[in-house]
Image (tube, rainbow, N blue to C red; front, side):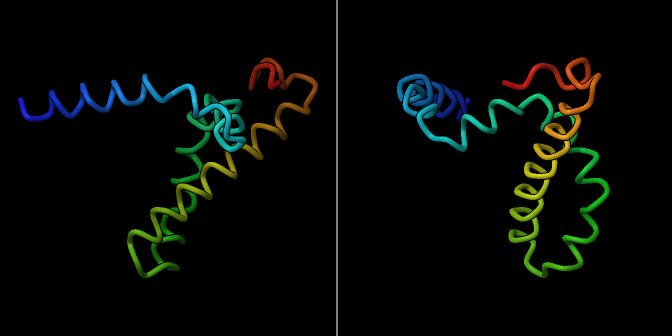
Length: 95
């Protein structure tokens, strides 16, 4: 019951100020590749998580590094696949 006011308030804030978000370039880039990031990020994280945890001693820094790395690699992989002749059937039409 305690989360209901928080969720309603946050939802209202996102809906009220959500029109300002698309003006940022990083949001447009991420939204263009969002579905492919969703599909590829698990593979990237499962292959590289042990290296981030071993390389970065701080847990929060490792998580932040993994997020940034997974998003960047997912975008690069999806853009590379889109250049293949059959890429539009795998990743869709990337604008």
